[in-house]
Image (cartoon, rainbow, N blue to C red; front, side, top):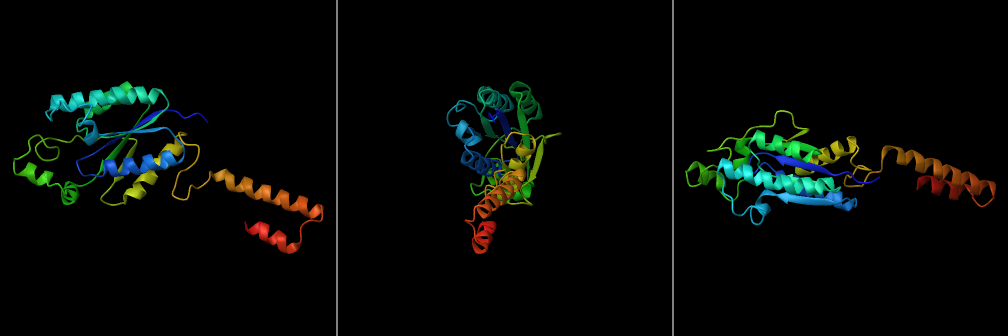
Length: 221
């Protein structure tokens, strides 16, 4: 099955776990030989949008540029995993319209938990007025109204949340097989394999090559 492109857009407060989950999903997809690209807020701001600040105007420009890149990749059959705070609903909806194949993931986490995880002390600085226009403190975050998936990262582990993303993609027909840690086959695979084993056993028995002990060993495989 030829891979269909899709942008998986992770949005949420700073420290909610967007990048962590997106990286886990990317690893699983790459292990399944899918074409994957990561677009991450911190990395993009060091290159593509390093000339932009954090005013609303600059935040919108940041998302516009990312949207353009994601659109090009998506239409060329790539899974684009974008992890951005992207606090404004209108900017995310514009990205959806522009890209087309768009799967919004709301990485939901309480402000208290995001602050607890903040090893860089960004929230503390923002609350002290040292950082302006900081989402969740001095700048609003507009929650998605109808995201394709909601992940509650203060209640479940990154691994569990990554599994939810992959399961959703499988359900929508974007994945050929479910990519869990054990690389579990599709539901029909196990039935097919068991039937194939039965046919092999019967054939070998009819030819006189298979003893009862060997037959039992094959069935255990």
